[in-house]
Amino acid sequence: MLNSKADWKSKVPQVTAFFWIIKVLSTTVGETAADYLNQSLGLGLQGATLVMGVLFVVALFFQLTAKRYVPWRYWLTVALISIVGTLITDNLSDRLHVPLALSTTVFSIILVIVFVIWYLNERTLSIHSIFTPRRELFYWLAILFTFSLGTAGGDFMGEALKLGYPIALSIFAAAILVIALLYRGKVLGPVLSFWLVYILTRPLGASLGDLMTQHEGGFGWGKGIVNLVFFVVIIGLVVYLGVSKVDQEKVDHESHA
Image (cartoon, rainbow, N blue to C red; front, side, top):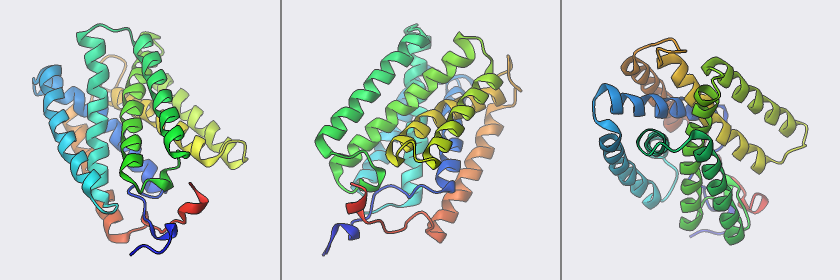
């Protein structure tokens, strides 16, 4: 029986250096894997979206019904939602011809609405408080739209504005650095800083993925090889987290809610 809120463990990992490393790797894979399924394997946007959508729903079901945070289950869900988020934006851009500026704006508005509804219902956006089903649903809904927004924003900067992938990558990296400095200087709080960086790491990873795999404006490396290398690294890190449990520290939720 739970004696206090300090005993309630969050369903998501603690924010460590490993968290951000795997997050960036997962966002990059989300970009390159979506392209690989769509183009290299010939599934097309509809086929890739259907296959990955089903896999994501299954992974999310097991994540939501779990009693505690398990690294492989959590990060599998993140990797799949990253791919699905990318495919949502790609469908809008490539199949429905929605301008990237419009999709970036719409996803930004939707994400703000999700955060507002989440806060009005739970009075917190802290990831340290994800220990109820409703909060976890808000959490994954927000993450889905951060990935779709990040894909649209990354493509908008790199392609629509014709800045190129290296410059877009540098801009997003610089923005993350500024937020980190503002956080360390106590100008920004931990919750706002976390979500801003979480949003920006998506276009950062998308720009990195495009830089490595695109032939025009990028290095033109094979998507299959890039995906394989990144997946191997992610699996290795997740296995390490499962053994070491360095991201499963107990948190007093009273101080974060």
